[in-house]
Structure formats: C-alpha cells, structure tokens
Length: 427
Image (cartoon, rainbow, N blue to C red; front, side, top):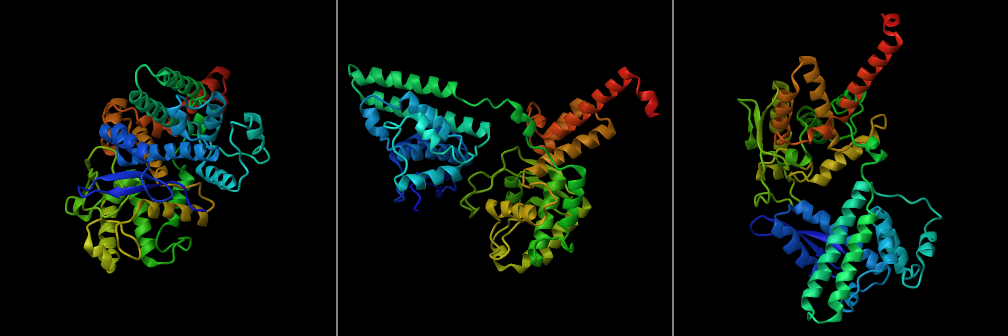
C-alpha cells in the first residue's frame, strides 16, 4: 500500500536541512508546512527535532484519515474533536508506528468506521483480540504534547481569520480549551516504575565479550568482508573508549585528528554544505578536543592507510568512517545496522545500539573515579568536558544509574550487616 504521508529531508543551498511533511502525491501539506516554518524552524529548532515533531503530527493525520475526520471542515464550523475522539486519539498515540501503519491498512480495506458512529468501547474491542504493543510513556507523552500544540495552533489561526462577532470564534476557543484540558489530563506519567527499565551500560562480562567479538581476526566476528571487520572494530573502539554520540562519531574528519599530538577535535558542524548526507549526523554537545591513546591512534591510522584508502569513493571527501562499497560518508542507518547485526549474530550479548556505548563509558568513568578517589566536584567537571556538557548540566545522572544503584546497594547491605552483627561472621 502506498504511504499516505512521508517526511523528506530537503537540503537547501546554504546546507540547511529542512524536513518537509508530504502527502501521498509528494506535495507539502500547507498547514503543517506553515506550522513547521513559523513555530519550529523560526525558533531555531534542530532539523532532527523538527523531523520528530512532524512524525508526531503524522500520527495525528493518520488518525484523522482512519476515522474520516476532515479537520479543516471542523474548524470552519467552529469545532475540533469531541471528548470521545480525543480519548481515542490519546490511545492511538501510544501505538508504535508499525501498529499504526497496520491499522491504516485495515482502514483501507473498509474495516474501521468513524468514531462518530461507533462507540469508543466498540472501537477498542476490535483490537482487544490481540495483545497491543505500546511505545514508552515518555514517547507517547511527547507525541501528545506536539499533537496538542499543533491542534491549538490550527484553531488559533482559524480564529484569527474569523470576524470577531462570529459565533465560531467563541466555539473555537472552547474547543481549544477542551483539547488542552483533556490531553493534559490523559498525559502518561513518565516517572513511574518504568524508570526501573531506563537504559544502562553494558556489564563487565558483556564488555569483555563485545571487545572480543569485534576483533577483526575473531572467529565470532559477524562480518565476512575485511574492510567491514576493521572499520566496525574501529567504530566500537572509538565509542567504547570515548563515549561519543553517533552523530559526533560520523562527523569526525581525518583533518580533525592530530596524529602527532594524539588528539581529535569533536566539532559541531550543523547544516554543513560539504556534508553530502541528506540526514546529516550532528553533534548535540559542545565542541571539544580529547586525547587518543597510542593504541587507538595507531589503529585509526592503520585503518586509513590500509583499508579506507582502497575505496575510490573515499578519496572524494574527508570523513573518517565510510560505507563499505561506495566509500561515501557512513550514514546513521548504516551505523545502526552494525549494532543490529551484532545483536543478531551474537545472542549472548544484550540488545546493542550506539548509545549504549555512551552509557557504558560513563559507568567505566565512574568506576575509575572511585578507584582514584576523585572528589565529586572535580569528577563532574572532568566528565562534563569529556562528554561535551555544560558544567551546570544534570545530564550525568542519566548515564550513571547503574553505578549509583550498585554503590547505594553496597552501602545499604553493609549497614544491614552492621545492624545484624553479620560483619564479624564474614571475616
């Protein structure tokens, strides 16, 4: 089935990446485009942030299509969504995109009627026969905030186009209030027991296994091609030993590396016209210069001189990591695929993704600071610099959950033993 909507990244002559919301004919939707330009781009939102917002708005439009709701006609009549429809929309925003797409396919076969003529209970029963998967509460909440803001903006625009004495102006104001109040009241709580499942780094056993598997000469290395083995091993070492974000890693150029000083500059180059990738990998953090160990420096130099150089396409640009066949700068999707293959071919490892390496680095850093007995203030400054965070940032707490939990449990256990007099028996 042909997709009804899609997000396409447009590269302007200045190098700026601008996501566009297109219909099934490949044409931009007027209202969504105006909203994107005036409410997102005009506020200097990053291209990835705009794209994420547009994907949430896409969920809204798919919902409207499934239930045959013409939102423009509703607005012209001074209406938005009924309370039943809002509750149904909130439930819809909890679904993963795969499930949303399948429901759109079912609708195209004429199975789903509009909620105007079908009660919410009957609507739910249609899909209660199978277990329903849901996105994380934080993801659903983010979708709902964006959908809420977009609907309110739509109604405000239509209100401004109405004459002040029009009866629709007041009814639109009431519709806005209903949208805001209802969605806010149904917003999922993201600070629940789900926090126990927050991402953490690899444990010691998994770290050792990963480093063993990705060695180019390892029998368990899942790649057959020599270039892929060496490139992917180098990628893992860069991520493991420096905790870089994937956008930072893929943005590194050979010219950023000073092999004599054994340093690399992690730079921010948003909307770089010299980057041919439509979906440009970006560094979200501050630019910084970090040291390379002699081993990682030599491994990087060997990759450049013995493997990267053999790809003709790689000679046309300066990016360090390149695609195995074309030699073009490596894409985000290609990097994600490296981790997917590793997870599939090495089931003894936990589910892998690029950002888990950043969590792992931070846990290793905490362990090293504990051994060296570095005071908390100095540790925070050192970590913030190496990660590219502001000194006042509280981001470190996100990446040190396992270390904090294990340290707290260790102290708690010692306290219990002291209270029960068990410490003597352990000696």
